[in-house]
Amino acid sequence: MSTKPKSATSKMQAYRERLRAQGLKPVQIWVPDVDAPGFDKELRRQAARLDPVHEEEVMRFIEAAADFSEE
Image (cartoon, rainbow, N blue to C red):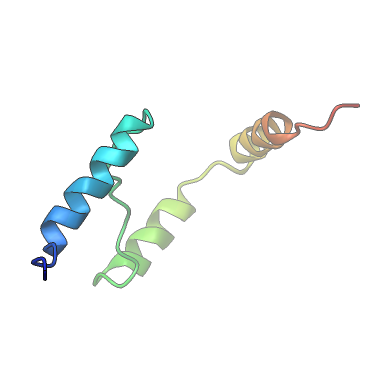
């Protein structure tokens, strides 16, 4: 006896239900479109406004926070 194949929608719903059963939830993240007109100009504008001293401090903090070695 032949059964009707599941639609892509029902497969995705089942997949999401399995993930939720594992304690996961979906999130949506919006990121800049690097191909958008004017992206490079805006990137340069923002980069020019950075304070090198402050950025050095931020980078030191990020590096320290990312160092998970057990010394």
